[in-house]
Length: 54
Image 1 (cartoon, rainbow, N blue to C red):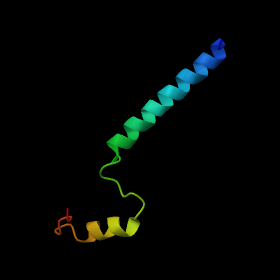
Image 2 (cartoon, rainbow, N blue to C red):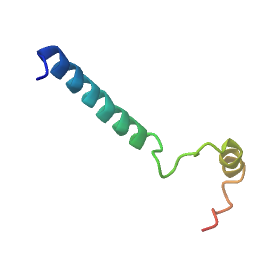
Image 3 (spheres, one colour):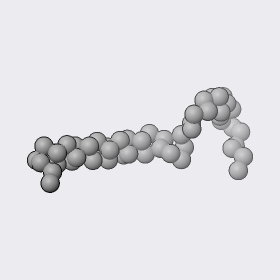
């Protein structure tokens, strides 16, 4: 059985994980982010009039 200290630790970790998910989703998230290819992101910013190809 978990001790009180273990339960509190699990609750803190769950809250931190939830806050991280909320922060990521509000800052570009998984759909609109760069995805690691920074050259691609810069080229979209340099030429905003060009639409992204589907």
